[in-house]
Image (cartoon, rainbow, N blue to C red; front, top):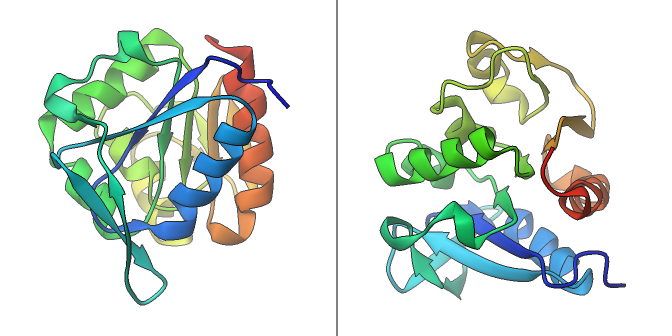
Length: 181
């Protein structure tokens, strides 16, 4: 399957990402032909959180301070509790995410991943889902929050949790293949 042949996907993450919410979509993207890059405020590696303990380390391909959205076709924001909380406080990470929203390039965010999107101030009127504990944050940002396994709004794909990964991965690949919305 090469639906995403030569598409370049940025995965914006910090240490503390939920392991399955990065590794499962990354594998699905690569199987679909995408080239996946880990972008992070960290310079060398980031470490996952796997259910209730620290997990694997992944190599960082580019520091966020050096990343440009011009180099990527789509953005993936994995969840985890620590990861988005760190990213939303990082000006470069928020600016990078905001530039994707402004460009119309597709974005996929799962679980707590939408917290970084909230910081852009650009979610008003969007239909989204997320992990239930950030529902109120999204509603306060102007989102029409719905409780579904996957929601798509004009190239923005969101899901609730790891149990939704199959549906999330399918829709993410579909939207990333469509390109700019």
